[in-house]
Length: 582
Image (cartoon, rainbow, N blue to C red; front, side, top):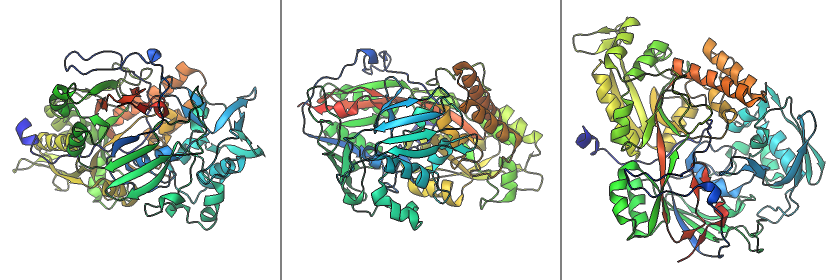
């Protein structure tokens, strides 16, 4: 089986950026089994004064679909434009607490429903114009709350169906009134702020969703971030320069980021990225478990360190299309919307075998949207489990009316053969391996799976636009609070993957999840709030709309001439302080 799997196409590790609840597990212990070198306790990490200059060489896993941060729904886009924009706040990846960004300070009233933000007076757009309260009010009222502009962010900016009231107090002061107090407000206002003087005409003429496409000249992209995009060649590379107006400085008054230029090659094949990392053409590389036998012996000679960041909030799963508007046969929708059908498939997933083969043992089996990284929510005894059991899987299918034919395949009551097409993004070795394992195991219980790998951007289009798919292997990355997963878990959510944008919940269990999430959003008692989320994720575990498989550990290889490096599952801590010392 392993030899057969190893012959499949190599793949791109690209995951749609969606939000799941998690808490940081920092890299503190050495993995004696693999010899992976890991980082010290984050409390001991203190960035030193660095040296300005140099070029950071990195890799991007694919081309952006858009340069518009509001419309971006996938990491291929956000990886390109993430450094160009700022929110009012940002989250410290070491402490997981909100801290100032475009807002230098804030205060709230006694009720917890009125917040005043004071903007930095030294923050400027790339064109030199100041960032003002007009930009903040425009971003929220005219873009995020605009019914004509689809955005996954919108789901996070409502409390019990009511939006924030955002108004200007003076040039550098903005007031937010929220319907009720709720815990993650300061993280919620970390969304990118956009320039009114550039984008207002596109909002007024209703062309905003198409503005800043990938053919837009980089100089037309106006943000506030530490870097600005200066060149983008589709399929080849992106080049960045330090933003000369960026406000932050180190304790000696030097500008940061210390690194003044970044060149990011667009390399879809991770095997090619691995080769380029070893040869020195890129400075850091997201390590797959299967890379370790090749990388570990080269660490000293090639002068790099491999960090094990521990359990991640990222999840991998299979999801079946339950959308009545999807262009798939109605009898298949009937299968996919049956809980026992989904539970049967879950029992047929050999999670431990998949982890050993696809992840070299460096992952955790999961059955709902909670990973071991979710310290407060992870509870092995609380959530349902579906241990690998092909006999149980087949039994459930027979209970709901499938019968075995003479050819060994199962057929429903109307005589339709139990078969479906399973897709994933091409170039992802782990997902292609998993797809072939699932195909083989499901065949053993009479299910025919047509497994295909397709281009990632095409996959996203099918998932989010035309809904032309039956089943998919895909993944979610994580955020620090379940609230920011509302675009996935609420039935009305744009990224409610199995049946998005519902006008009202199509099932009673989805309605209950909606209720629990809405109640948790305004619950300030942390223990009560956590229990509300646990109840919601228990329902997800019982209903299996997404058949969760594994949560991988995260490994990162970094050249040792990069200093002030402290990677976490949330990104690099104080990444602007990284500098090059050769």
